[in-house]
Length: 265
Length: 348
Image (cartoon, rainbow over all chains, first blue to last red; front, side):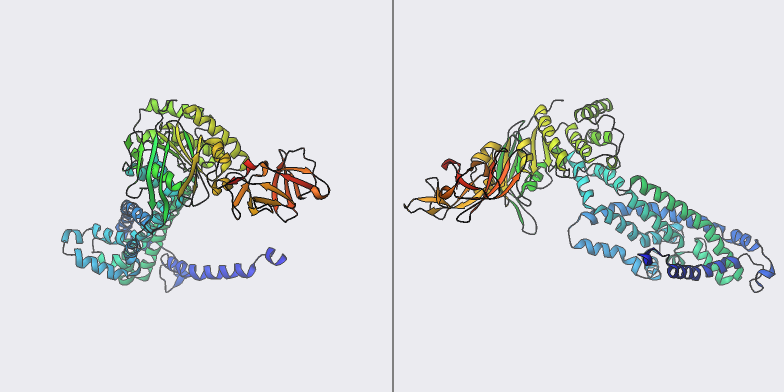
């Protein structure tokens, strides 16, 4: 009894050590973005000029990333929710195959998926050079997260009964789907949307292959700055990434939690 | 509220699932307009399958037909059959309020908003949910949810009301209260209803007639009294109420009879040695008896308020369940004599 009631100091210390191990590189990188000269350390003084430079050169990538992530969420929801329905209801053994096929882009390296997209659609110059091409890549990569999450929610037996109840009351398929099923799985859709947004904002592998100099996203810009500029600029870029994306993700998580509390059951 | 009652005819409907499981053997039954018929039977006997066929949630095997009045609805999809259904776990729409749940069927039919409000109000009054209109299902008790489910099914003025174990999820006390309430409501509305349950008391309280099912087939259809008093099959007698199962033997005089530790019970003339006959506990009479006239002793006694339940062990080791009057003074160990009228013995 006393051993379980005692505070697990050993566990707390391990957790703190692991957390520090993960956060230290990030803290170091972010702090480098505020130093005049990384080699001189804090003694060299602090500055905001690297942040200013990043914003001047790469500010557009922030907006591009957020817009692409938002569009990815909308498209995966519009495609994924209806696609999840037949997967959830079908008793055919082909269902598992379809589900595996949809999940392939997660297992296959992003570079390979990107190459496949370029081979298939790269000859359409206008499309290839637009943000829409990057967007398609993000949708292909994130769609399985939406489909599988919503399909799992739709498979709950009580959902089948709700659908049947709506049918006995005279509702056609569209009325049942939009009026009963979608609201019932709304928390799952929101949770999947949050995952899709987060994955899209940080997506690098695919985007690195798909982008053009005019269609760069935040992670691609970050790689670009690390590769071609001073270390301080790359680090300042990391700081920008945290400053823009983290608050957005936190707000979305709060919204998702509110939805779960209101509609969750 | 007025509902135009419809007759239901189920003609030779069977159901075989894709994996070959036969859930229902070819079955035929009819429900008269305004009649409440209960499908009663143990789990897996096919009663819910039969209800789902009438609802249109399952399609019968080729050769089966379902008629509402003279209309063949076998191929009419569920949403156009004009039914109302109450599900075992109510299946209330969790994101909608009580009023929105009740009005759902009318909204999907694009009913006039004024008529929608009036009907929802009528239903709320009918099932006495006043004051709870804005609540969501999660904020209601089991009994209240059951009422919402019933009101939602009735709001569309169904041709046929289907009830799938509607009281099973409730606790015993509430269930008993709602049984009578449901029976009264269905009779008042004069709605044709098919009620599925495995609870004999519920079926006998709510329904005008019972269809008792076993292993995918209907064994007997009749009023509760007919089925209880004149069961056509041992299964029916055993499912409705309790029975003692006794084996017929040959008496010293060569006639068939039931031996009772020194005494004999006369059996129906149709019974032969080796047959099984059934005897209900309330049809057995016991009197205290001394000496050689006793057939056995009271092995167990339980006072249940409305009756005394005895277990009598006869001298030839039969253990009989006996229902005695609640004033019965016999105690454990008392020697007793056992009697039963020959016509009370059920032989099939």
